[in-house]
Image 1 (cartoon, rainbow, N blue to C red):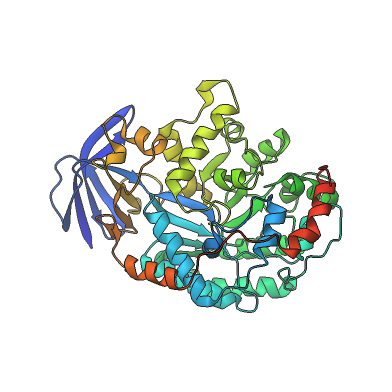
Image 2: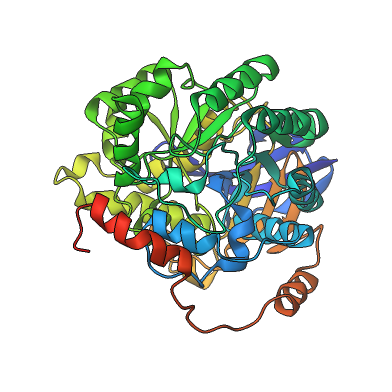
Length: 468
């Protein structure tokens, strides 16, 4: 399939130019004024063309709890989350479809799904999520969330048990599960990649991390984990290792240019230098960090140290949306309050590059996607500049990043296929999706504090130095 996008507005250094874009197969083959027409003609007039963003860390299955959880810090929030009944496989499919749709309609063309698996139905969970992503056509990096310790290990200084906490699988069985997923689903040519994704140091043994490193090296897989999202996790690392989590992950060989790390809120200057040395990527999740009170990641310090940074929405019940443009806006403006030196503040163009090329680099794909470059894959987005939220006309990228753009995505191509046209996905029925979600859910009031939270709260407050 081929396309010619005519007269699109394209950013160049210090400004914009108008050009045509040719897509042949999965790749961009020409970007220049007044190109010969090939294939289907798409008008780019009064539209801004940008590379697709990467939603570099989310948990799609949390869609079913968004808006429902109380304002708790992560450790108590998790206890409440796991009080909900396990999902059914069809819910996994629908939640992935929603996550993909919202990502596409906010400028994303790739998604890293750190998928929470249904206990006892792990492969079926992955199957249903990938079914949804392939159906809608987004580029997916499936990162099955794994751990081999019980949830009560996720708090420092204690052996408090959480009733109904998610079970752990033995380490060998967990690694066998990931190997099965790789053999069944890993197919980058079809826009489906599998990542090794131990959830984090708070719930994973060194044996699990080392097994993931071995699988990553054997199959050339990227690696993904949470890292030091909360102060409690910083304390856990000191208890477990006698050093920082970053130092330990470096020592066991987990950090590399193929490693992306979600959150990274509680890092020291030494930790930051280690990330720069190893080439690991920080995935910035500003909205969930604010929602859960985790802190503000020192993103400007990372950028100044040469650490690659990308953006993400995080799970839909810790955000509580999958609006990537919102995450980019908050994730760039938030850091103006962390330094008085305005020369270090993140500009709209820098934010766009972090969300696109930064996201691609974190997945070891900076030579394939992430910029409007001839020869790269056509993962691109057209924005309608006549939309009311992008008017009156000033700097289009400034309006897109700093404003409140709504319904501004006109078209999206992934791997050369136009999967959004005229603001609607081309492969799925949005009305049918809405109907399914409506019929499978109901209005609820504020939930009472769960038993699991009540059991943990006194201990959490004590170890965090809060009044009990």
